[in-house]
Image (cartoon, rainbow, N blue to C red; front, side, top):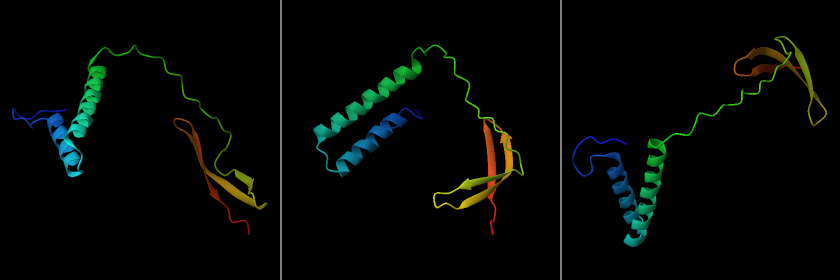
Length: 111
């Protein structure tokens, strides 16, 4: 949220509330119901502000990511039986470890 001047609608929150209220008016929502909707939004924003500006939780230790290790290497050919019973041949084009192993394969023409 930002403010760029002293005027009433010179900050993001005021502009957002005004725009939301205008949308409610355009949709034909009665004033009392529109005020309730905006009050709930304001409460949610205040809660979010309190969480963001308040004391932060203690740092948690993260589990290291699971890494699948494969013995596939470029040039390897794989056979896969599809539900129709046919066999599809795949050739490994590239295999590398980044955050986890990835293998890129291309379908071979089995004629």
